[in-house]
Image (tube, rainbow, N blue to C red; front, side):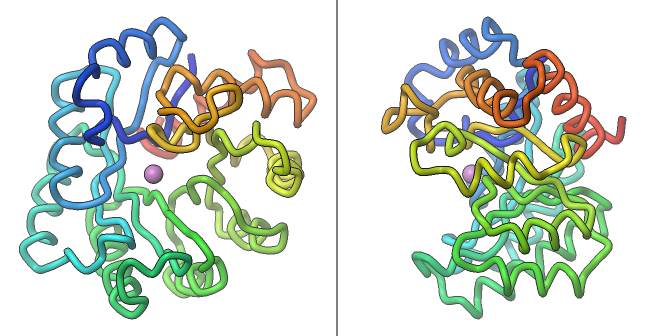
Length: 253
Ligand code: NI
C-alpha cells in the first residue's frame, strides 16, 4: 500500500468534498496519510481528522510562514495535542527565507522551540525548508541526533548528503514529475531507497498531468511511478519499501 507521508487535508480547500477525496485516496490504494499542521488551528484539525479516520495520522506544528503566530499559548496547545496517540510527529516546521513571511530570527526561535517539543516527546520531525538549507542543516547538526524527514526536497547534492549523514529521510512529491526537475530527479536517483519517503503535499504541487490544479493523496501513485522510473526499480518494490520507511519513521514499526 502507498503512504502519503505529507498532505494538508486540514486545508480549507478540502472542506467542501473531503469525503470524496478520502474515497478516491482509498480506491487508489493509499493505505495511510499523514496530515501536517502549519499553525495552531490546522494542527487541531489534523488531530481531529486523525481521530475520526483510522487511516489518517497527524503531525502538529507551526510553519515558518506562520512563525509570527507562535506564542506560549500555542506551545502549550501543541504539547497537549502531542498526547493524542494519532499524533505521530512534529511538523511541518523549519525555515523559509524565500518569502520571509515571518521574520528570519523569529523563524529560528520558533524552530528551536518546536525541536524542543520533539525532543521531550521523543517524536520525529517533518521539516520544511526553502532557500535556507545551509542554516537549517547547521542547526540540525548542532541538535543531532534528530529523527525526521526533509519534506519536498529541493536542496543540492551536498546538502542531501549532509541530511542523509544525519539519518534524515528525504521526501519527494509531485515536483519529480515536472519538466525541468532534473536536479531533483538526480538526487532522488542518488538517495538510498531506505531513506526515501513519498508525499503529495496536497493541495499543493500536483504531479503532471494535474499540475496547477488541486493536488490530493490519490495522486501519490504518479509520484511512485516516477520514482520507480528514476531509480530503475519495480513500482511494487518502491511502494513497499517507502511504506515500510513510513512505518519505521512515524510509527516505530
Ligand atoms: Ni506541506
